[in-house]
Amino acid sequence: MSLPIKIEHMRKLLLTILFFISISVFSQITKADTWDEAKKIALSENKDILIEFTGSSWCKPCIRMEKEVLGHPKFEEFAKDKFVLFVLDLQMPIKVDSENYQTFERYKKIHNVSFYPTYVLTDSEGKEKTKLKGYYSLNNFIKKLSK
Image 1 (tube, rainbow, N blue to C red):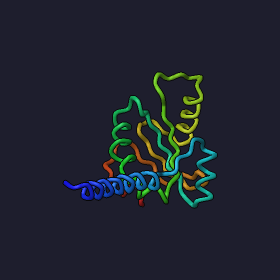
Image 2 (image 1 turned 90 degrees about the horizontal axis):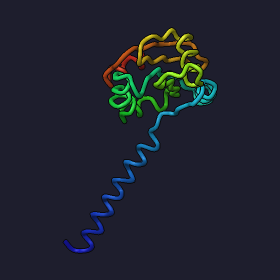
Image 3 (image 1 turned 180 degrees about the vertical axis):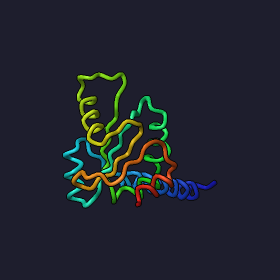
Image 4 (image 1 turned 90 degrees about the vertical axis):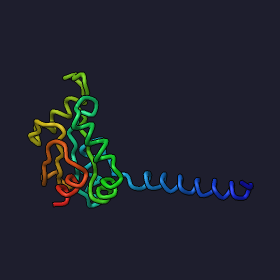
């Protein structure tokens, strides 16, 4: 292989890598750390809020949803212009005096959540539109959120 061919091959490889990096950077779902932040972003960007009740370190269906659905490029592309994601992740071991637990419990009561994962879709003001419980395939999850 001659040097010009190697350089051209490297250039194509570099462009391919940059393309995939740009897709992952620009097709991300907006995430909010607090409910107030989620509402503010949703109002300013005319989006709904998708609340995720999860146990990312211990709940098998939650882990599977994150890996197979929420982290999938097809879902990210679908959701990026529609939702602000507000994640409530119950950490183990449970520390009842922790801010994490208190916040999780407050929103769990508001939305009557008793199963994980649960996804609550609200409008930008917090009015509940849809509630989805458990594991969904990628296409079924998108379909349910599209209604």
